[in-house]
Each structure stands twice: as structure tokens, then as C-alpha cells.
Image (tube, rainbow, N blue to C red; front, side):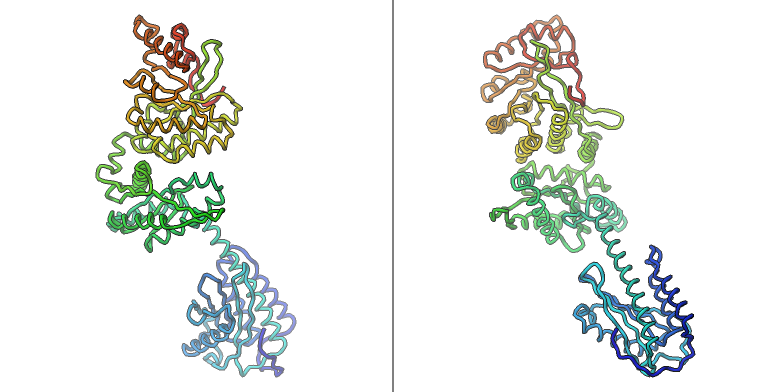
Length: 612
């Protein structure tokens, strides 16, 4: 506490004996009791202290100042009595001048929020506040660091203080410091809780929960005020490759760098969020397609130009794909708008990445919904991780031993299980098949690891997945993560679907064969290019089209002849054969007599979410 003591006693009528001083100390302690309510009413507590102190000591006001590194300074005055406006201004300038001498309050002259509070509405005995004021003050550090506090008391320069006055003032300062520290700590804590509840911990952007709240709010506001706004769905291209090659710490650094790039590329008032992983979103209020194109292009160009330094001091550059949808042009509610933007994002990636895709008239959400409710079902299944692997055994006909399992895609809801036949075509058309494949493989390999299964796995591979550049790196990473030998993985390529992409499939198979993966042609014999496939590809298994197998137990001899021919051809080429749709004992006998190597179907075992 600064200021010199004055030994001359002032003439006053206050009671200052030990009894009254003890009572004041007791009242002061009660005001220091810290609860959530007392924190909220901290100004009331200080008013009470000022009113109590005024009965024991002569002073005109108390001030409190606190400043943090990232906020404006706050200066609070608590007056015993209402001062005249001119005196109040003079006192405020005097306190500012005193505080500004402290480097921690260097901005107080230009960047400070000032509040004046009366402890008592009664008029002072003299009818005014003396303009001749002397200050007693001290400063203190607030926790956490980077925050500073200041306390002061102003009393009439014509009124002398004795030792008791200084002792009471010191007690008051200690009490006020405790209150201010508690308020500051609770404020910091509340802000941290709010930040973690609404912000992504890594990037400090809004998190997924906050994004949906903000999107719903913007949708309502746009509807009410009749303006357009745009939603961007953003995905960093090939991010998994960077994570796999350099580790998650490097990947996290890149995500933080991109979040900074994203914020700078957006307009003032736009809202950026990290939806999850390497997926981001941006809500652009009052924004049509033309403006959205400009913003999206700025994001793409900014990332193209950014050089990210890797641990080996080399530099890498990234790209981003963006899907764009406009409210209300393309959708009438928040969920539909996101569905469409995400679908456009998938389209941008399927067209080669490093680009944007804007919804057109044919792409509005009603068109997507016209494919049936399956599109919404698929969207929710991916988001809620309702994709579940089912396993159907493949039995060696010679010794009846289970040597492999085919992994089948299912969507499992609370009341039903939906088979792949009911949603795969829709998933491919909306560009979601890649996400389904990734989720399915991840879950299937986790089940293999947990069960201790060491046999082969057959997995249906959608041709649409082949255009995704990150497919092979992702599969390889998953196998490495789960410590699975690539030779145990057999990809099934459906012959009737891949004929249009012969060169692409050939390159794909050749590369993965070098890594040890094996391949099967599914539904063999159903199309017109079966023999061309055998010539072009290095195939390990032929899965005979189920329509031929299913009819073998009837009167028709054509199906038996076809199956026997396929079995003979495959045997000469060193390719194993599998008969699907083995649903009865009679069919099993027929395929065994035809020379087929393996059987799969309900008679062997129905698909199950469990291995073994």
C-alpha cells in the first residue's frame, strides 16, 4: 500500500473500539464466503464492504482494476456517495494516470471499460465529494499468469489517517483481492468449460455439436430474414497418407495449419468448424453461389500455395476438395443442406480431388431423396457407424472344413438388418461407397483380430472405390494396424460391373497383387467378358454366378453343364472355384460332383455378425 501515514487524528464520530473492529472483521469474512451465487453477485459483496467500511474509516471511493493479455482493462469504482460529474471525471483521470505507470496497465488510457457503482444513495454530510483526494493503493497478480489486478482507496486530502485507518484499509484490500481473484478464476474456468464444450481442442474451430446448432440457427435466421446462405463441406485430400507416413503428430500439425488457412480465406462473419478427422465445414451467411465459388476457390488456392515443412525438413503441399450447397435453393432444412453439400464433396473427390462441386438444379436434395429414403438411411448409417460386417463361411467341399469367410455389408438398425442388395446401388450413386468400404474393412479387421481368426477373408469391392486415390493406402494402413497378412485378403470384383473400367481394374489388380493381395471374380459367367477377364487378370478364385448353382438341382441340364465347364476350365488354369447359393443338401451334392472346390450358402451357414 502506497502513501505516507499521517499521525494527526481526524475528528470524527465513528465508533472504533475493539468490539466494533472485531464485528467488522467478522462481517468482512462473511462477505468472503465463495459460492457460485456470491461469485455472480460479487459487485453486491463489494458494495456491502464499502458500506460497512464507511462506518469505521473516512474515504470517498474504492476502485478495482484488472487486465488480461487478450481483453480490455476493466476499471470499477465503488462510491460511498454520488460525486458531482466533474469530480467523477477528475477522479477517473487521476486513477488512470496512476495505473498507467504500471506496464501491465499501459492500455488503460485508451482501452478500458469503466463502471461506477454507488454503495449508498444517501447524500454525504457535506453535500458533495471532496475534490482534494489522496490515493492509497496496491497491485497484485491474478491467477493464471498474464493477468494483473489493482486496488485503491481515495480519501480526502484534508482528512488525516491514523494507524487504525491504515490497518482497516489493508484488511479491506486483502478482502477485495480475494474476491477479485475468485471472480477472475471462476470466469477463466467458465470460459474454458465453454470453449471445450463448443470448440475443437486441436484447431480451436467450432466442433461438430456446435456446427449443427449454428447451422440450425442460420437456417432459421435465413428463412426469417429471407436471404440465402451457403454451406461448404470440406475434406483434405490424401490426408490419411500423410498420417500413415509421418505419424499423427505431423498430421495434427497440418490440421492446425489448415484451420488457420481456412479462417483467413473466409469472410468476416463466416463460421468455420472441424466436423471430425480431416473434415471441415464452413457456414457462409448472406452468400449465393457466385460468392460461395469465390470463397471456396480462395480456400483451394490458399492451400495449394502453402508449403508445409515435414520432419525431414522437406516441404509438402496439400489439396482440398469442397462440396457446396445453397439454402434455400437446394434444400429446405439444415440436415438436407448438409446431406447435399457432403454429396457434392464426394463428387468433387470422385472427379479427381483438388476441386469444388456446386449443386445444380438436378442435384437438389429432393432428387437425392427421389432415390428413396435409402440415401438418408445411408447418410445416417455412415455418420452413426451403423455399418456392420457380417461373415458367411466358405467351406472346402472335400473335407467340409471352413477355410474362409466372406465379409458382407449390413446396415443394422434397432429393429432390422438391411442387406447390401437394398442399398449398395444407391450408395454408389450418391458417392458414399468409399466411406462404407473403409468403415466395413476397419470393423471387419477389428473383429478378426479380437477373435483370433487366421483364415482368409473375402471382401466385395465396389468398382467405384477404384477411382478414390486413397483407397489402396487406406487398406494397406488398416492391414498394418491390425497386423494382417495381405495374402489373407481376397478382393471380389463383380464381373458385370467392372467391364467398363478394364484398364483401371487391371492396373489396380496388378499393383495389389505385387503386395500379396489375392482376387476373385464374383458372379462369373453372368456377363459377356468372363473369358477376357481370365486373360487380362491374374485371378485366384472364380465365384460362379448363383443363378447357375441354384438351378443345378432341377431338371435342367444346361446349368450343370455350364458349372462343370467352368470348374474344368478353372482347374486347367490353376484357379479355385466357389459355388454360391448352396442352399440345400442336393445342391451341395451337385456342385461337388461338378468338381467345384468350395461351397457357400445358407446350407453351409447363414451370414452372422460373429466369426466361428
